[in-house]
Length: 352
Image (cartoon, rainbow, N blue to C red; front, side, top):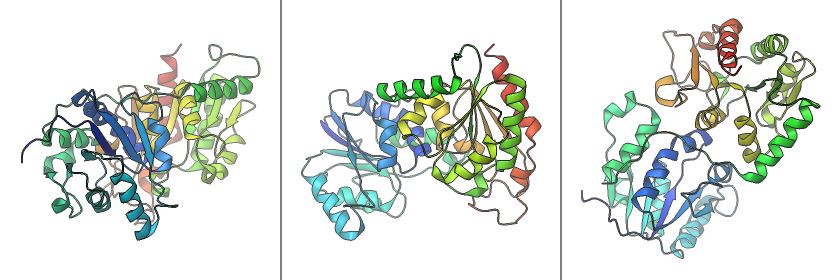
């Protein structure tokens, strides 16, 4: 296969569909920009992924894929392809693996289409890259970077990056200032807790353990406990809030993603399940403690030197299931509050 042409001037990148995966593509997005410094680069992304790239200097425009709206169903996909065709892209790079991504860009008549030949879509690509079996032993960051190498592009460094929206940063400062009630971030630590995960309950350390952890950290540090998540995590947040003392800020379901990113950047430590917000903390270089159970800490762990992974190796882990297939949930139940607490305190001690 010949490398993709280097004279492209109007490029479409198809983003991944999950926040965490999108964060892990940020080195690849930077690589694409460095290979095409003068090109206009548009990102095709689902609405909840758009905030990840809203302030990214490597992206000139974000095209929202309204999969649950005007782009829903077969007619919607044809509408999307027609809209993309009007933009006259000369190259598309598919970071997303699905057949649909290749089909839509094929129907959009984008002349050069590059990506992995996954999901039976090889015939729809002009430049298909075969996935090497050894990639399963590497972090997901390398998965996207090696695909670009397969297309004949130069890869940039592998470090994650995330750019914050200035307005969201102002909102985050205001939220935290109000919660601190006259004190400052220099006075007390900001302890972020993220008890949820969109993938399913098998990724989630029990809320009762998060609640006990919050109480312990509040007692020992006097810190502000900030609880992150969506509206689906509000029940867990209420349980955590009940043990967190007077200094607690429950943000579940109350912020935009951009505001949540800015709040995570202000945390002294962030304790989290394997989730999109875990990767956010890694990209922001926020010290973090990641609790892993059913998922693969090698492939999708936090790509950061400021991270501690806490896990309980059991024979059936990682099973990659949304629910424990054996019913005992030992990969998570076996992780004690004490070991997560010690990992968090270790990071906090380095902030003093």
